[in-house]
Length: 184
Image (cartoon, rainbow, N blue to C red):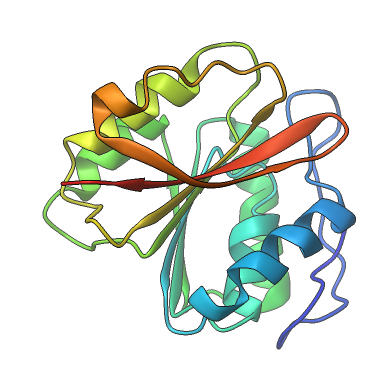
């Protein structure tokens, strides 16, 4: 696992052992960032269920102004901090060791994020819980792009009810990225 492009290009990143996280493969990450490239420079990026922090760090490497990483797993938090330090992105990074819903509530009234990426554990319904919380949050506006990484069989029938619309969907062999905007 490595940074693919930008100022930290080719730097290797650590990941935690075990099955608690599923690092996004370089190929999928490259496809994702090719789609996001015009949006990244100068953006405020929120990486939810951050795992190793590789997605937010890739965004900073490509010119994001700031990335906030939210992770509840103690080992993963330690890994993210090591990766932030190794890439020397400490000034552009904030790491919150807490559950995602609490973190969203804690950030209320502060920044409005340009891009929010979330990769929650599959098949636990966490996408819906987080999207419900975001729908009433001041950390998003109508221009915020929300990307959900999910298994191919994840159910998203509730999106319209919460005020979201799918702007794009990219399917891979085992998972997908769903791109959302919220109509405030």
